[in-house]
Image 1: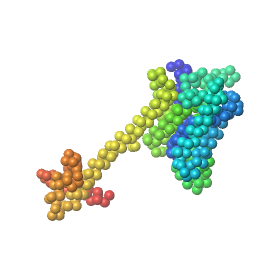
Image 2: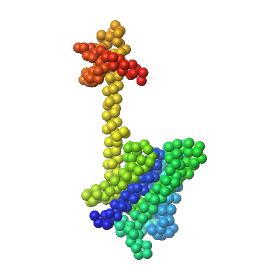
Image 3: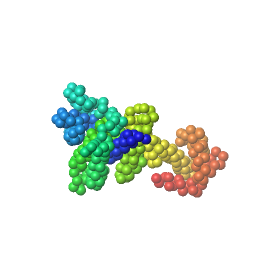
Length: 369
């Protein structure tokens, strides 16, 4: 592995970790769409700041992007509070408008500058090692690594310092207000983190991968755990795995690195969706299947217990009668009867069923639930 390849992977991992932290809180607050909006609208802040300072390397570009990111949140809140549209509709109205203004400004006034919408949207991680950080003539590695490393440290520091406030405001805004916290201030602070993270990652990975890394790893982690500390750690770990896996997939396919990483994020999320031990679709399907059979067995036991000792007991205990009474298909009824008998809850006497003592006990318990 060459030093440039290692640097590309390091940049990708740091970007993934930086995006995963605020992304986890956005996902828990059911505001994942806001990351998409901010990741696009901050382009307007970059453009406006560039027109002021005329320097693509100026830190004011990040400040301008953060301001526009917060303005996006404020505008969405204003539209949403009218009560005429829902929040997702408000987001869909605000961010295309701001992003379109940025694209128009780039096309009309910055055509001869290395500031174009394709670069911002797609990015190219392979170019990260060429832009070096060389203070006093010392080569300290890619600029993107230092920028995103600093943003990662800021995100970790903010989450560490305000962990309690973020946690309470995320899960119970009313309790946060009662405890003296300001949910609005916490909300805008989180949006500021998202804005700074998004614009810092633009030059290296583009907004598409920023959105993928903010939403995909936290969503996959949420399928695996409900505990916030573990969710944050899993989000960072999954993002790092997707970054490294996407890089090697891009090398194998000779494809765009950011696109390959976004693809791996999608694959990992689908795997978590299918295989998560408690919430995965496969586990859920098996659980529902077991519940279906358990419900059918309980229904059979309650039916037999209800008619036991009555004049109609002989007729009601016939298997063919229960098929008609409960509208069960013959094969399904036979499987229910056989599984119930295998558990020692009923005995078969030709075409009739009789409850055992454990079966009567199980029927009483089922009728109480």
